[in-house]
Length: 486
Ligand code: GLN
Image (cartoon, rainbow, N blue to C red; front, side, top):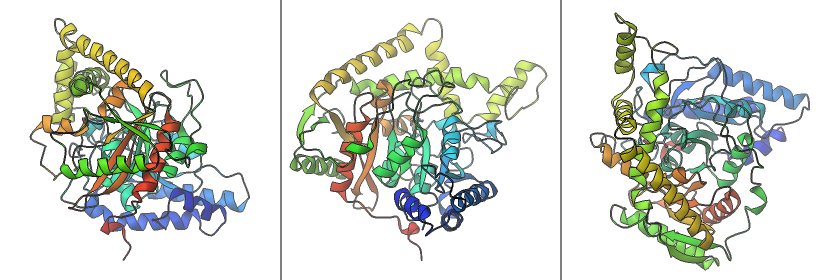
């Protein structure tokens, strides 16, 4: 049962062939068999999940209307506020923190009938690409436990890959949904900025952060997206227009679609097998009638540098709130200043500290124009370039990650090498545009390869249409060995 798609489980539940309680028990068994190797969860809420599943079964018995995710076991990243359920963001500074409210996305999942199994591991405050920056220990890759699952939402990706949940949510500031999805062989989607409310998502870099789903199929990612998307008055950046209606175009194929291959997202630094699998998929799209051409976006070459000014700058402002007064950890001191300094020094790990220092520096008087101001100008240039390219192409494609999953510890001593993992995913965050990663195969070491499809703002329809075609052409149905029930 833990291997069912949301679609299949939903229909079995609706027909009464399966109960929400049985389904929950089955995924909890899967989690109990895999968690010792993976550590994809920070919290498993056995009691809360069982109560939700029982409630869902009761509703079926009483013939009450069914929610879109009725009885479906899901997880959310540990930077989503969950009422009275520990929310740490993978940080010591929030260890033991119990939010008094649910994030809007969580509230909508509960309203849709979903069963929240728990909170998934992540890099501290979502800063990282391997989940090794979690203060509570790393998550491992289900395809090879010596490898990282990607990050920062590595726990969500790993849990979906093994069937400890049927779907999950994460946050994507520079690639934190798409990159771990690629490295774990699942689908990961970052919507257009503003389509999913971030109320109750602990902020990292507010002009970039976006919530999105992980699933095993493109159709399931659509269902998860539909359950949470749409205007929320509690989020000032929430989009007030209609959410693109993506489902009807899912099966339409790519005949006649203009597909642009991004020249800048390839070449040096890319695994040969990733490059080969990407071109093979592009050839298949062309065989299906897509009009493929190469496009160039010169500003993509500097997107990583722009991101590593803007994201730390915003992070330094957002994380000022963790001061020992209002939330979590407090390390006493002689004065208030000393208490705050000690709390922050003890509570934040090295990567978060590095980002706060970098961001504070980039925003300081005398450096603001030279660093932050200039980065904002290049960001505008990148947005303009993307708009021009999207006049020639309906979608842009690239690898999701330049490499497959790397070994634990391989990049922890070299922040720049770690940052380079997001070179393909960051542009969509800077532009606020939608992008998805779809698994297209395994490399010779048995590690998954992800294919990224990008579209213009609110272009989710054509993005999902292409993603569904990629999924069908890839016909990827391999599962990690640890997900296969004995
Ligand atoms: N890896 C990138 C970073 O460390 C992106 C993180 C994210 O998307 N949350 O900033």
